[in-house]
Length: 532
Image (cartoon, rainbow, N blue to C red; front, side, top):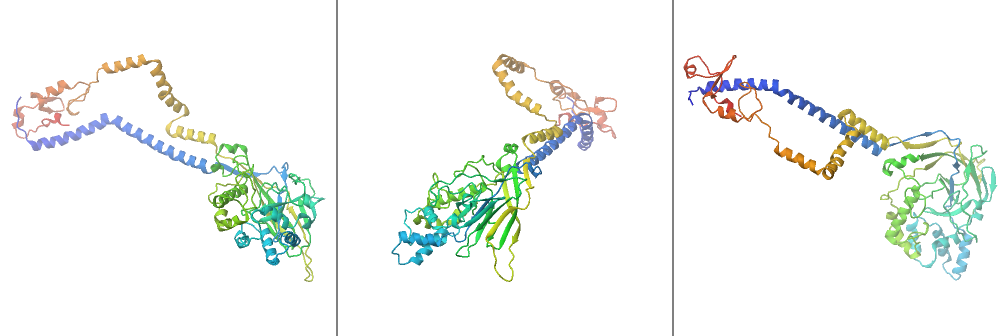
């Protein structure tokens, strides 16, 4: 091999010039597929990101707001039940009954006045007054084996001595055949048209009949309940609750009016929300309500919000004290507290009343009664002519009912996902099925049904000749690459023709004489074909 003297400064200059030429040519001829791949990758990436963003927003909408509530105007064919009306007393005890009880059980009592006051406080016992009763329970007036509920029944004013006359719609009826006693978290009351009331009372030898739900029709002349109370010895007030027949007034409900005989009529409106059955495909968290048969309660066969919170408080009472107060139903694992156990209830009453950790939601059939107006009794010449009669009626035929239905269900979610994926990625349900098929059924079939074919393909892959690659380091501006093993090219470049001159006509070796001549430069750098 001939040795040549090389001017390295010139070689460096030519190296950079020809490297630039090589780069431009590579991009022009060989770079086009790379640019296309980069553009394809960017488009697919943008489409995938856009698809994921839209799918996440659709999923969030499906989880948080998949229902819509609209106005139902088909009110003429409603099967409308009249609401339950619960009447409580600020002083439910009867002086006569208390005196009779003292004579029977404490005939020689020296502190009759204090005993009377204690028994009177017992009839006022509620969730809010439990703390005040703690000191009375420790005085020993009441035996620890005495049933508190049965004792209160003996002390309160019976129905016959409260109501004088009652009228539903246009028909008069016996008040005590419509108003029944009920124990609530607010005390003992009398309720009309409610499913929850005491079946056994001490002033009746027979069990009270089951509820005969009273309903109204659009053609009725009146949609009201009117009742008149007897003259009482004390100035007693009556909290009045208007609620659904399946609910019990409690700590979650406020009275619509505290009747002090100044109001003659209460006109109310009804706003009812019902949910269609197709919403059952959604979860409770999605639709924000619970169907009456969806969650099984321990204290009632029908789910309502008030029943759920009442059961929660009962479980709290059992957790802290092992028993429940008398104004809750005694059933199964819930037993009534004795007198000496009420002190524990009073000490933990705030924790018992708390329902923050209870998973209670509104029922899917929810009714709210709002008072629209009061008609106040007029007094003349400063004389108090208050009437002891109250009428509770609908302000008009109920024309407001709301329907909750599915706006965005599973089918809509599937269609939306498929449309977005098809728009941005060209993906379809069939493509997904094919992917699952190729990686599951097809693979299993090939393994278990055609193992010989797999072995043949494996042997064919092993004996298949490896593809030739151009392993030479000749720049593209000297010679375009061609598939080859590259051994001959690399070996040939180690011999005397490795120094070449690039011209517009041809590529030829550089002579020693051309190097020595002044002004004649070397057009190709020495050894550039071996550079990486």
